[in-house]
Length: 375
Image (tube, rainbow, N blue to C red; front, side, top):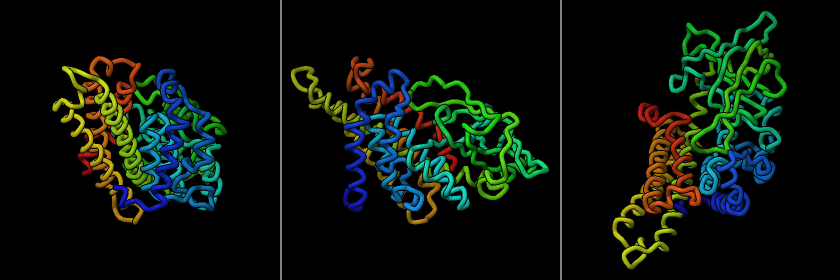
């Protein structure tokens, strides 16, 4: 894989790996065990350009490509999946649609602070009764006589919801038009009356990544907050998720790699029947399968990222990458627990966390079942 990376991409990976190991990893257990949001990392991530990876320099970003983005997410996920998804949701789900569909005023207003990390972003598509069936939106946007939009409804499962400043919101304006009746808006969550942040969800994994509902009641937005053209909301959401799935694939690769590396290290030290368990064929088979699937997942993620960078269609490739990588990560974590035996089942070792963190990659930004339909 290294032969396919440019010098810049290798340098980005090196920087991300060093930052992850030196700065993020010491916090990882606290983040997981205490469900701790690592606020102190946000300014540092911003300084490195990790919160504006694909944002042009004119808007304060790092102006890197999507392969570099995948490399950054993988290295962060290798040590702390919670931190990786905070970064992923911010970059791919909030920044990208503003960059791709926003007008110049919106880009100038929002991108510099998002790229610097002085504001954080989120993406609000799912609802209490609407997950995979994203076209069935019930959160409404009704245009008023003065041109403002009245928003009412509830959004669920919002990554970064409790801590976000900026939200890309999807609403239904014309139900009779189905998916063509959906609009997208940019919402200043902390400065807009009528917005309520719901309780923070208690989750199985990615415990430091805060998730909540967002409630809109008599929330009025000026016309300047409409993102893209009227009726383009569903198109914007689907295009955004295509790119987001590359990030989730990279996250899954990082988690799976962590399970593999920890398991290999443990297997070399743990002895059974007179020799390290790494010398037993059954353990070697586990490790070989983990290695093949994780490397294959990375190749699929980078293929999708390269197609995106080249302006080629990548919907199918992104879905393939997310599907394969997420299932590979869960499998690697399960095998890792088996290799660790009883130690794999206790929180003293990290491998049980990898399983809890990996499972969500099969669910969010499109379940494995939806990815198979897309493919």
